[in-house]
Length: 284
Image (cartoon, rainbow, N blue to C red; front, side):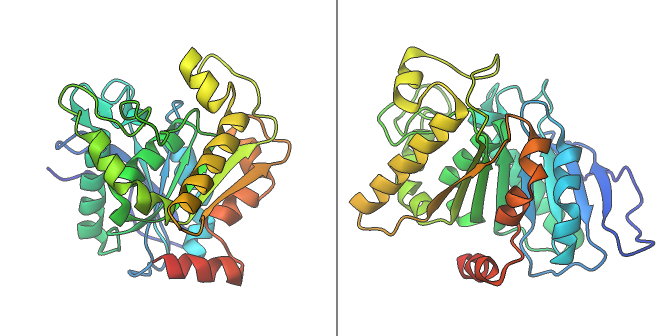
């Protein structure tokens, strides 16, 4: 039932070691892990979730050096296209992608004696869809949530989950009720939404229906703005201080490397500045 390490984990210098975890027999989820030279067992891991291109290794390597400075592991799960075609929506062929990640984190905690009870959670594109829906179902596991370039969002509406917070049909029909019950906790979570200023054209991977386009907009930039606005309004309606922030990444389109280029994405996900670090610590 255990994972098999594809690379030696011995450090020969002060750089983090990046290696692959083969899929576990249970629920079949593997990925890439970055191990810092010195692990702080109290530092929550960063979980970085890929988009539909499924480049989990790139997600792990993008954050490895900054995470190592903080004694933090990076876990980049790889949702194989054949096994997990609908991982963004958490359900795939009767299997729960969110529960597979929980199991993977439990195995990592046991193997390396690190804190995976709560995580810093980041998702890019399809991974951002997964990440905010995971946070809706497991808010107790997420201390800080960062999303970049999500294609679309779960809305505080009566439509069936994952479109809204309503009940659906089939074996995952109850997920809407769970998400609905946890929505207030999402509103109280430090939540950073990022999107490129040039990510304003729909492409072949942009989910588009008349209802979705009318509610959320026709492209990722517009959808991010509208979702942040509706979360802020909902927080105020409930008497809460809004904790969601929107960052528009100058000059970036729908390209992970472009989003990273200016350094702002990295700073938002794993901040170095004292004010942001203090907020990150308070969220724990």
